Image (cartoon, rainbow, N blue to C red; front, side, top):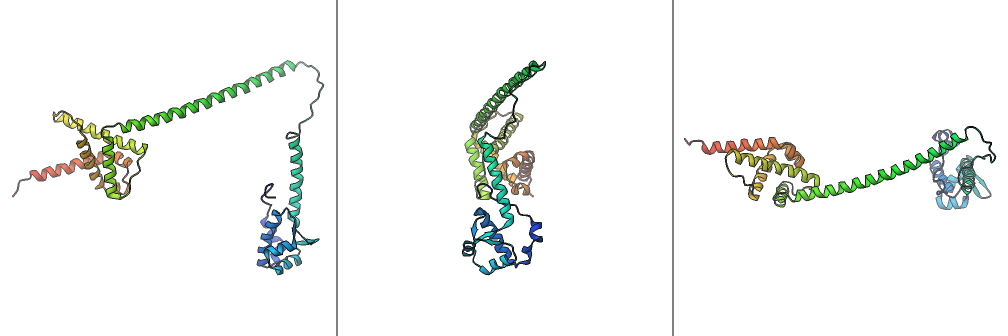
Length: 282
């Protein structure tokens, strides 16, 4: 039964207003389980089988005396489930018959038609509809090809972006430095994917740009070495860690978005240190 219809209709209002409410709560509970077994057995269940499975013969007697269930030729009968089962069988037979005929019955078509003034118009409309259907199919195929090509392009583009990230100056050393700093604060290894990589690269690019400007202002030949990049990154991370909010949200995207504030703090810290070193002793 469950393959055709795994459930039966249950109306709470009828349950609450029915004779079942005159039974004990134990009998009500047994009847609920009995309905499930009865339905699963295609509404064909012997009283002896039900008692053997559920026990509590006294509760079965209560259901029988209250006419909640009936016994006919040793079999249990539950009227409202029998009615649903019969309707289901009738509907199933109709569906099976229609299926054998190829689906919904078709309307009869007159075999003899008389020519009229609209025949050519109808014929043209039919041809137009057929052409439109063919055009829609062609457009759909083109659309699917465009989507497939777009996905392939995006995949290639993502691979290229990852390759460009890996080819950045001192990339591996700087990533290792980020991992080392993070693990010293949080023990665990940070998440690092393509998105995180973009934030990290943005930070490194700004480091290099600032270094170029600094050397230019001081009339020094620019040289961006691995050691200088690592020291710059480490100072940046140490100063970011001094911020309480960033400690609780220590993610590369937050470090990138707060880049200027962290750098300004670095400059203030360095300025105070120089002032302290240059202060005359008393």
